[in-house]
Length: 377
Image (tube, rainbow, N blue to C red; front, side, top):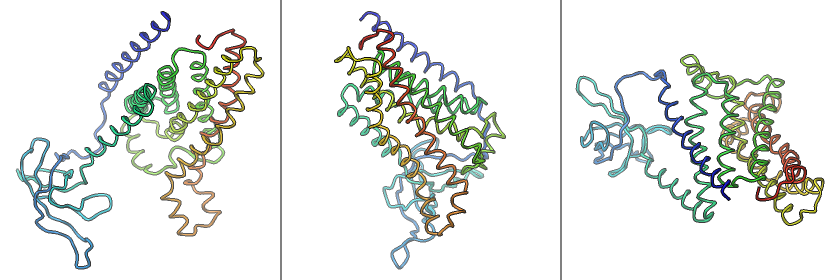
């Protein structure tokens, strides 16, 4: 018990030191400005009056609205200005009195020029996240709260470690591996404590993610797909030219991050199952424990493989319906960069899920039987 308490204290201290280190790391990075510095800013505002509406005779909307808005943030807070709202799918908003919007403000010769950028979604997003975390904590109890903490830690790792490291010139694959290891260590130790099943699951998760990355590299080579055959490649190249980013490896590092959750789920479930079986039937041999783990893993593979593939399919739905509507020839579709990339992303992660099943089954059974460890050690 004393050793466990010491371990948790050390875990907390190291986690705090890690977060502090991230703060200093991000402060040391100087990002090259890529947008023109025209003095414009984005501020919150509330529509107070509709000066010119864009409702047509048929009841639809066309053209632009001219509205009065009260600025509620920034140096012009409290001022009322005229703003133009375009009728677009990506920019502008359908304004009514009381609508909360984000406006872009530019100053020319002392005059303020304002345009409605979009709806102000900040409040709704915050409420949405709070409801999610609250529901997770209520239904999951203590484990739910710990899951929420681990999720926040994962987000911190991606935003404050993974992205900055790539921007600084670290190979994206290595940045992803480091990020996966840290997220795995924090999440599984937090949820499973210091135990055999936890460390077996950690080893299995890291192994599975690396398998996914290696498979992605190998098949990308034979399919002649690189990290530059993606959407927004022009913007990516612009960033690469103004930083130390190695854009070609981002596609493959992203596959590691995307597969982490499913691989971690399978690894921990198998390790936990073998742990319980060994606890209640310590007379079982290593071979029998491995078989039990394999049976559990086979049941999970189908659902987790579907989870990974359907996640990528859902993300590609827009392009899929476009190709379907245009009746693109099968030969053209099969050899397009789009389909090749989607198949690469979807299947590479499943290789990690599949390979983690025998790996975790063997290593967990070995740790219990060959090393003579018990459930709580």
